[in-house]
Length: 394
Image 1: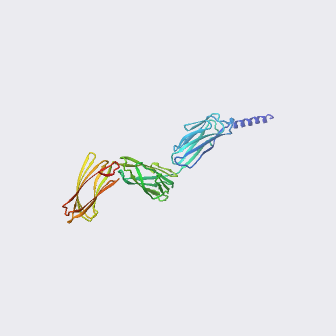
Image 2: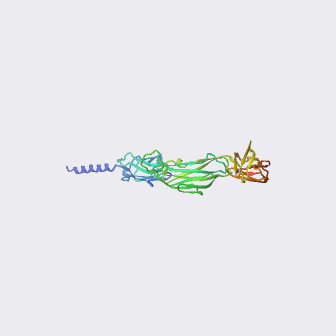
Image 3: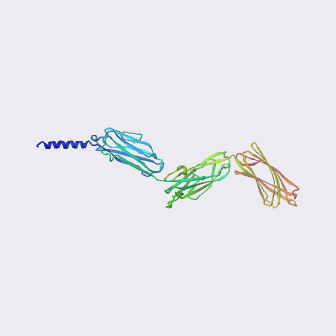
């Protein structure tokens, strides 16, 4: 009986030694430098692990940390202060004890709740209840949609409207909304109107402000929120070459955009190498006149001949379309003008050639023209269309 205390002491010592050999690896801390982000933000995630107690006597074997991060958080860089990191696995190896940190630098390229899941694995880890950690990063979003309209085709020198409308189709207010509008170099700004916000012609930035979402509780298949429209009056430079040119846009707001392509449309401007040419004859006098006109147009390899016969009363005007002509086309106009009244009168008329880019005119005045069409005033004029679609009388 006197040996029993010694035996009990030995058993107690054995139990204490066995308990002391238990190793526990756990997540000391998992955090991100921001828990709310938007697309394009760079987020830093730190994962710190530890062992209890953190000394050599309680080391763990074959320790790894598995990381599973949503693809909407694109890993750009990973650094560790102990071990190695490769393809989502952090290797800490055998006989590991103490504290270590893995730092992940990630690019936010998606919306919603972005998650990271982390698992510790070790051969002799006695406590598995603390081997899981999770990080959530909230990326709220709105769904902005833009539409843009321009004419189907444009001529050099033409003034036209570029109309863009932005509407909030999402479930959050779009605050600090802006659209950057980039015009091609052959288009010039003239003026603008906006239903909301302000436009800076020097920077091309349309500052819209807040577009509210539709928070009506009634169910609807067309849950459109607030919209804003900008109309830019633009002009194609007269020397612009034919081709297709783009107006590009880039829309931003405080929240991430569900569809950057819908929010930032690209609009094609199709510029032709022709220009609409008109001949306008006007009678500013009180004398009724008769006009007989013969027109010859040489446009490249094409020759066009036309004739017209009409009367112009006091203050009357006649517009004749010569069609869409190319640069360097030539026009010959042979014009006979008669006094359509009985007595001799002073005849005056203005002949104007007009394109989208330019116009030029000549006025003819002849006194004491005999009446009843007995005497004709004959004038031959020639003009050419230069490289800027200007009308030049030759």
